Image (tube, rainbow over all chains, first blue to last red):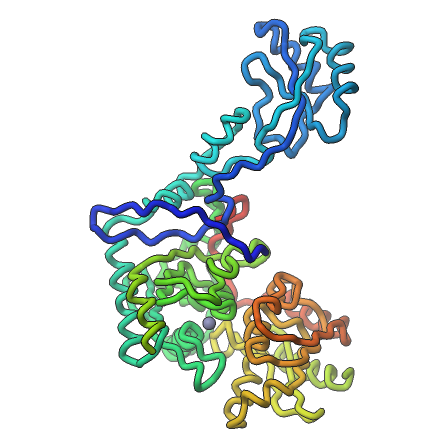
Length: 329
Length: 161
Ligand SMILES: [Zn+2]
Ligand SMILES: [Zn+2]
């Protein structure tokens, strides 16, 4: 993991509610405006009308490397041949001259994007080098444009962050947390930092503890196998969503923090960020960043692919007030 | 060290019999056990109730000067501490961690992530002690599949977010 995250500053869009929408913390590759390039040889067809015939032979002589599968083969009368790496210009030209009669007897080298574009804006930029294939993910595009939440949802996020701030203030703490079940807008737990008592009692750890206490009291018997969820796979915006429960939600007992949202005044540390992965939290909203933060500042733990669960993370809700909590406690 | 690990394995076996992920842990101070615990996630309904964290709680309860204690202990645990527990241990400047098998799902000492560089501390980490025995217990558990855990809801298989 790279500790150096150079996110481009995104323009904050003022929404109709006048509250700024929370900003998604996505993988760096979505924000990058620098297009990584690689060098390829490019040939020219003599006659554009016969391009299809030439392409058949080409595919056998120069199969498209897998690493370039995001690139189109043709640009006008220019044809992408192969990567410069691996074959000399002479050898490449020889093949063109002797085996591809539909081609001009010249080749040139050209810089093309080495990776598939991830967003519409990256696609636009990449196309300046060479035409690319691209299938935008609607969800990602909405995240990038801060256009993911409705006004009502944005107001709710602010309301809950306000609750987290108040929880910190009421307890003279510099960090406050609330856990919400967004299905019925129920406050499931709230807590604040108590690490002076016990080094593991960070606000989030306390809130998770509180959720487990509630579940032990409300549902003293564990979920048995015959009530386990029926699973089905659905695809939404290319993202596979597993385990959609086909039973009514009230038939299924709560399991850890599945489906819950966490609102925390500052970016969680590695321990807390991981604790929320263990607990199957759905979304994490944080007010301000923190120097030991593990969702944006030091690393992006919620995007570690090897882990079995991932939550969505959003920042920048009432961050001025959240920063103040840090300073005056 | 093998003796200590055998002791941890017994704790892990107890966890397994109770339907928990079999992980056992002890904290040693001058070669004496000052805390011992096992994973009890299912019983507590708290996914953060790992053996290492339970031991830390015991020590905080038992010793007023826990801060100094943690800076002298050796942690022995059957499975590589997860990212959460490794972070907690490094934040306490624990000087030595000894573990059995690695933790491919959550390991914080290199298997999934190495969290040590994120902390301003040093730690002597020894791995592989009785690793086959430790692993066998885990495999026994995962073969019977945790009945309490529905698999994770959102899998972003082809997409990074
Ligand atoms: Zn924390
Ligand atoms: Zn752990």
